[in-house]
Length: 241
Image (tube, rainbow, N blue to C red; front, side, top):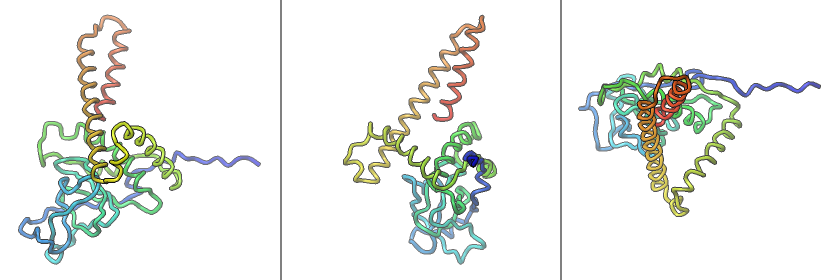
C-alpha cells in the first residue's frame, strides 16, 4: 500500500480564516468614565500587557450599529500607535476607529494566529506612513487581510506554539527568576523589557552595519558582494528594531 502524501504547507490569508471588525468615531460627549453602559476600546492605550484594559464606557442605546468586539477577539491598534496587540478578555465592547478586532474562525489556534500576525506586523508597521506623526499614522485593514501564513491542522498549530514557547523559555530563563513566575504582571513586565532590549540591540547593530557599508571600498566584486550581504542583514534587523 502506498503511503498517503499529506501536505502540511497549506497557505492561507488572514481574510480566509478570520473576520476583521473595524470601529467608527464616536462623539466624546457620549462617553463616560462612570462605568455606565458598555466598555469602549478607545485605542492603543487600552491594550496593556497583552490584554484589554477599560476606563471608558458608552451607552449603546445612543449608537446606531456600533462595531462590537467579543471575548477572545484579537485587538490591534490601527491608528496612532500601530500594531499594538492584545486579547479581549473583558467580553462585549464597542470599538473606536483606532482599533480593529480580529475574530478567528473555528479550528484556528489563537496563540498560533497571534504569532503569525505579530511576525507579519513587523513588516507592515516598520516603514508605514514614514514622516507622519500621531494620529496621522494609519494601518490599512486591507493589508492585514492580505497577511499570509501556513495553516496546518489545529493539533500541529498547537505543536508549533509549544515549540515557540520552548524557545521563549530558554531566552526568558536568562532574565526571569523562579519567583517572578508567581506574578503575572511582573512576568509580563520583564518580558516586555527584554523584548525592548533585543529591539534596541537590533537597532544598534543595524546602525553599525550602515556605518560599515559607508567605509567599504567599491572597487572590486568581493567588496560589492560584502556590501550586498550587509544590506540584507540590515534589512532583517530593520524588521526587528
